Image 1: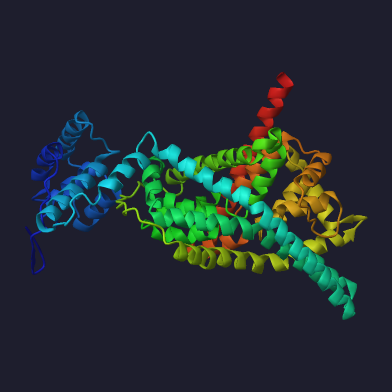
Image 2: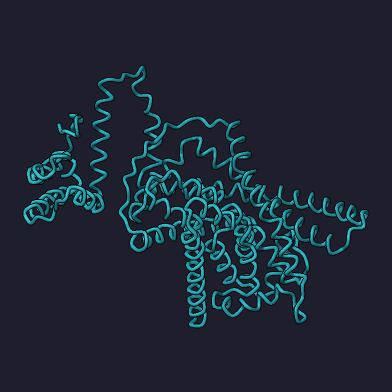
Length: 531
């Protein structure tokens, strides 16, 4: 019992495990007289936890110090007791939270009755497998692989049909513009610039999103996403962030902008900022088609019968690299410009439930697919005009696009790429879907985006312009690790309200991609030169 103003507080006293109770007994008598306005038991736990920010705030507000030599001596003795019983600074909070949950469960059992006591038995049996240390991560990767394989295998035919539809519409628009006697330069800008860019974005983005989002939403509706957060919580805790970042990372697979918005579920401002900065380390739906195409051309062709499976494996490896970089950069930020300790993450695993297919389709198509697609179209339309102008305005016998590529070329060689590839990524800032068509347009010196449906045709153009397996690897790595699209950057600016953190979100993944590509090129060249 303690007094705050005119109120006498009688909080429920939780009994922790005997080891923690013994540790508290060494600390509480020393501070009970110093902190009459605050519960000494709570302060004892904070001292044992070693949360410097909370302790500094208490010392400042109450004008006292916990640095007393006798307190420190007893504190070290308490730490020894905890260590001898396998309770360390890393798992101290977990033990405390577990005790609180067990106490809550005990109270619940006394006052709540169930008609069917074993109603959770089936869920717990499933969780013993899906959240186990041995099977949890492999099953998670298996689910992701299945989703990606279905997306890869299922998106090809719809994409081809959409390309044919847009090609047919393009011809009709050209006839209509000719009938109206619209000048050629306006026709070229609107049809071959704006329309063709938008058509590429829709044809490439819509089929994968229409497959990926419903499948992912089914997992979400089934109750599996919290299990992913549970499985990855320990990894993110070691990176000094929270397991909730795993949920926002999963949202980033569909759209990084949506993932950044999803960071609102993270309570800590520091951890929310880290999650926003690193969300683009997982490939969004706009980057998947490019990754899939390159994987199919340069690696899937090794085994024609299993090309889609091999492409799925390659894409999965790229995703794992992205997750590793997410953890590494999160930890680096947590120890440098965004120092702090991971916040407590208490996750209540919801019961498994049968997905409501009707609601899943409506939510995934209207709230996600069409929303993301609409944003991409709004950005892609003006970008198409800019790309057409750069490809068709010449200076000293070369297009402006070629001049830009020549400017980037010396630096690109160090990354195992060429200037046209870097120029395509820069011009693809508004929408990642147009990077490949810009590359093809540049290689063929065409004045408009190139639409090639056959992988063999695309592969022939790329190999004829110097692409090797090393080029393909570096392109995939840089596709994974480079600046987010403009939509995501604008979302980060809106969510953080800071140009500084928006620039950091642009620079950090780009720098990682440059370093990784340079390192890969160096190792590749040393290996093949040596052997």
